[in-house]
Image (cartoon, rainbow, N blue to C red):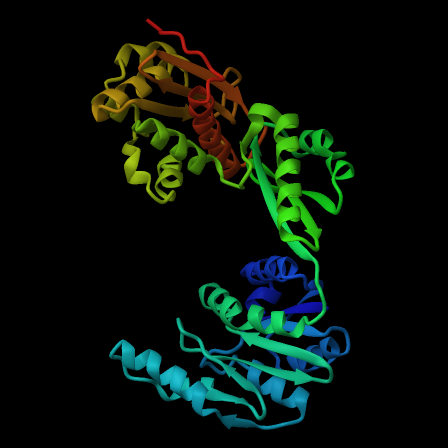
Length: 422
């Protein structure tokens, strides 16, 4: 069974927003055994949507369409679908109930414009939306079954799981291949080096494909397995993930796709240990990444964004003489920042960053992309200096944060030995 995905909206067509919906749907459909034939994007013009639906109906057995189901004048997907099918619109009672219930549950008045969301093509099946005002619908054009979902990602995901995937499972009466994905997240090697190390992995396992995805600054190795027996597919993927881990060693963060902050958090929780952070050049990015991890209150206790030198002295106790003699961007400064954060927070561990993210501020001795990282532990302290080639401020900050967390990760995993300074 082949599927086509259609995203509608001028904001997607013009690149104002990124179409993350299609990527999410494609992966879900592939896991269900439905091959995605292609991704299509079209703007808000009704005629363009209508013609695109007609074209898709001649190409695929299934299509999932997102966007254009809202209450405003530029939400024209239902009208276009009716025209492509050659029918009119009608006020669908189930759709109207969906819309009115959303407002009633919140004690809000329903505007007249929202009634438009209950106008569905004649013959369409309403797909209730439990988390928003826009009901979806399903209908068949030619021999293609179309599922129309809202463009709001949160609503789309719920409705895809609730309505579309079960419907597709029922349509697939033949014995279908089981498809699963395993992700091995890595850090510390460029994409080319990771690719070289894993290039022959898929040759060693039956029905396995290997792909790479850059989630800067991490590289994720994606393992795609298929077969008729779910247990065997899962076992094959586990073996392949182990092979990747063997090849990449300490560069592997997780064989289940976890990213850096989550991996560090898990390591800290396992030790029942706490972490404090002192940030200068990363401006709170490390703290954000850590607090994005569910359960971070169990290990994360303090963050100090000591951007100014005065704050480094007053909050963290950095010696003014260190700043005068060596400057803010120096290993000794990073060490004192980490020690100060650990002391102030009474934490088990602390990491600190101080550097030059750019685009200006660099010197011959300390060019843009320079970062000094400090790590303070019960065993001692250590600092590192790195210089990265990115001229982009955001990329520099992201890799600075990742490297700081990675120093702690590798220490917790026994790959680093610290020496006490001073």
